Length: 215
Image 1 (cartoon, rainbow, N blue to C red):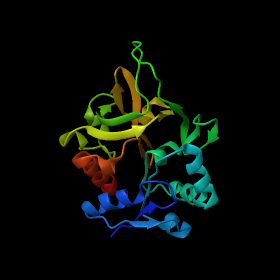
Image 2 (tube, rainbow, N blue to C red):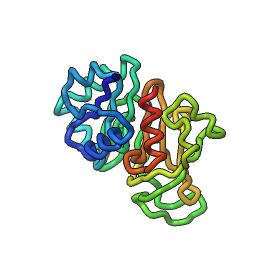
Image 3 (cartoon, helix red, strand yellow):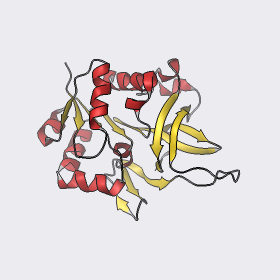
Image 4 (cartoon, one colour):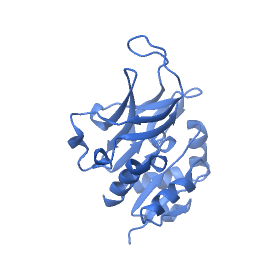
């Protein structure tokens, strides 16, 4: 059986992610052990809260270097919520904070006004349907989102910031927030990042986790 690691670095929703994986038949290992992370077949980095706090925890525990070594192997990596945001070069949350730099780009606050001038509530909280960023849902083939449209696009979000990858082709899904495009998922080589919480997104979230495990 493949070895799937959920990284435990003291930030957020690790147990709910493990429970969601268990529900689809995957007994993931919850650990912050650096050797286990480097040797895993797949790694999932969850997280909620502030970007800077997450980065401090990753550096303090030496996990940032272990994640870099793992990503360099080409094996599948999934970042969830803050676990997605820290993959970028930097974030503007509470000042300027450097990220892991695995995916070129920035993390920026969601605009409080839509392109049409409508005031938007931030943080963005609730269920929203995923929109393929390049054509139809067929563009998700070969990604963790493959087949998600078969069980419904709606997934659950809680966030005030979102990723802005430098290369538009890295963006694979977004949501339409009253005319404002918010990044929902990115893909960069063996790295997948999702801003939403698949562990809280019902059957659609389960499908996404299943597809990631199948890669």
